[in-house]
Length: 496
Image 1 (cartoon, rainbow, N blue to C red):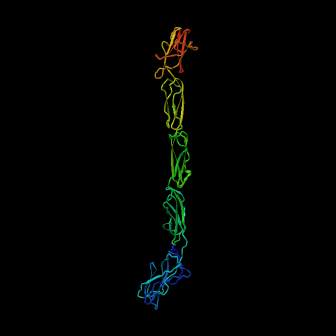
Image 2 (image 1 turned 180 degrees about the horizontal axis):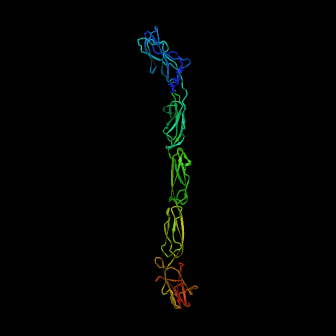
Image 3 (image 1 turned 60 degrees about the vertical axis):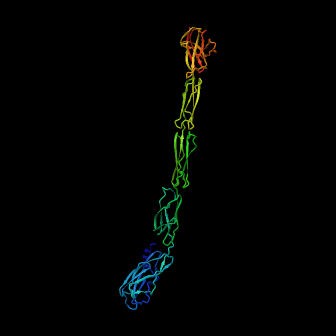
């Protein structure tokens, strides 16, 4: 309804009517007009038309008066006047108060019609039912009202319409629109009731995953429907799928031994990945076990993440073994290896090879679970367990020149087992001023010896060389016994 009261009443003093007199009611059959008749007359002003729009309620000014008929006498009477379906207005006349016009405003609502005019009837009754002062039917009892048809559709306009990508936490709950006239508003085809012209806030319909379109229309009182106003947005509540990928796979033990770069990627079947939010590559350079996490967001603001565990060990194992050691034949000598991070994939302990005498080298290798390999080469010497020169030779003793001096000793391994296959040779040199001179190959008096090499006596478990001093001048001498383990044993004695 488009403010009909203001529109009509503000013009009521200007209303012109095309029908000058409108009366209502019928004279009862057989009634005789006695003293007068009641007349209803629309107030007329030339050139103005009474009009309104469908649905408008207007007020029609009507003059009512009593006019005598045959005599100059009328009764007192009360007249009731109205349009169909409306409340009646009353006007009273005293006896002989004729030709005095009394004005009433009758309410009338223009029906919803597409007709150019409507012609409502004025209904009048009176209190005098005896035949006097009856309502006259001698003139027209209808009026003509011009119907102003509304053919202009309302305009509905969205205010800052929603668009873009949203998730459950950032989607607005309402939207705004404005309407240029009163009307019924429809959201996605469903009526949301009648509203007045102006700005309004409406609840956003429940969204569904994906593209959502909200369409608004408005219908005015004349049935005119506006052009549709709509907005579209994308609703996405599913987090993107994020993947963390190392630049290579770890070894079978799950370890790396060189720097590892983890890259991140993301997919999203909804609003799509916001590429700028994907975590940049992460390079792991420090030893240890690391949980590397990256994330990404989609265009609706949902976030996802992924993690990968990187176990990095770039440090070689440590080998503990003595370098330059001197060990007895068959001595139990061990080495060890350790790794404080990934742990050893190889043996943690081992032995140094002392099964043969002489100068030795041995390479020890250790590998950790990350694949780091370390080697260590040690140099060592394996010797016999020399028990010393046995009697009758005594260090510093004096013997008769030309005699035979038995040279005896025993060799054992670390466990005390006698060694029978050693090679031992003997030389001697004269000592002057406590300095040994040139060595001379010793001569044995025993037939069993070969050259200056000791022979082994398996009965006594000893090595024997019968040193002949024949032809050797008196003096102090140093005897040197050279073993095939690389060592030389010395003893001094004197001849007289």
